[in-house]
Image (cartoon, rainbow, N blue to C red; front, side, top):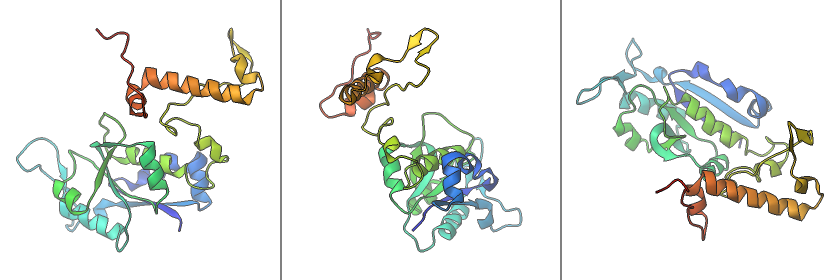
Length: 239
């Protein structure tokens, strides 16, 4: 079964966008995965194709209606059992572990929120899992959906040239990726570390592991603390 991403959005013309170029685009063209962008407005029932209304209890902005979005979800996922995701800044942070699980499945139905959000009742009734790509707010869920889909697609069999290229990168082992170098040997007075051109593969592997650990401790103490037997390193700027 071909991995498929179904996106529910008010702006289907935004897709495939970046997903139509580079690795994801080549894989899409060759049929390694499928993308379906569906317009939520197609499930509206009035002549104005209304999808939103004012917030209950008052306040600024508009809220996506439960009945319209529920109908759009039902039409997109009829009789199937696929993950249903809602891109939302209040969702759980997207992780590489979750990406791997999504890539190993049939592919998700991804709802792109807009306005002030989505009626809570449809989130509960259609079992939407809220997912965030960071602690900031975007104009809508489309860019976040693209990021999630791209992260999944690159893990599909046949998409990346070498499987190893997906095994040594950031988060694959709970660590940030080690520094990378290539020619020229010298650049503006900076040289490639000698150990990387020594030909000693064991020493190179040890150096890379050490550098990955040091970067993770310095930049992502939360990731470092989550590793078995490790503790977060206190910042030297702390009082």
